[in-house]
Length: 285
Image (cartoon, rainbow, N blue to C red):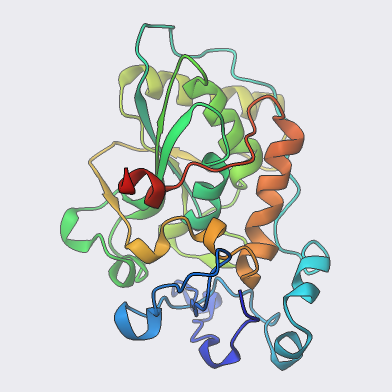
């Protein structure tokens, strides 16, 4: 991918004003060498705060993406993963080979990217949950007034990876579960930490695990993750799917999301796979 184009920097709203902050996406040839969808013309411009405030400027454009790669942690992007115990209560083992779970943990690019590298996951789709179908589009959700959270629908084989294990990855690697209505540089209710159980068994496991983590005091603050009622999941726009894999040198990805994939490999080596399961690959079959 070519270096960041400063023409599409931020229309960021000040989070202190009470408005949600948003991010902007400018795309160019992807990692595979193929052309990406020209967001600015063919699809809605993705607005802004996925470029960390104050970090993107002319110097970065001149120096190139290597600066971002070397200084990802130094710039204060992704937080270090927290080592946590597995849930004491998990779903009962059945003969099923397909199950679905929905997780919200800030920007769906990174959450999707993490789960796409987990063995046993057969599909991970970025989208919206918590609101209704009429408001399930990026521009409307970005207002922070729809009830939607940026979410990822994970389809998995419970014979290979359990719902409880996915929760462990979600809490330790995919996001910071102690942040309220924000993750990293992004703020607003659409970036809240939430799980949307599909079954009573999932709900019981999620509630028990949150109580377990709070009781262990493994985090310096209480878990902010809410267990919300599942009312539907709506897939996000095509240009949001597989974003981490297609844009590995995009500054937001380098700073905030690639470290999560690295932590997944480090903390869950038995579940990590190098080749991610991509939405666009699955859709082409």
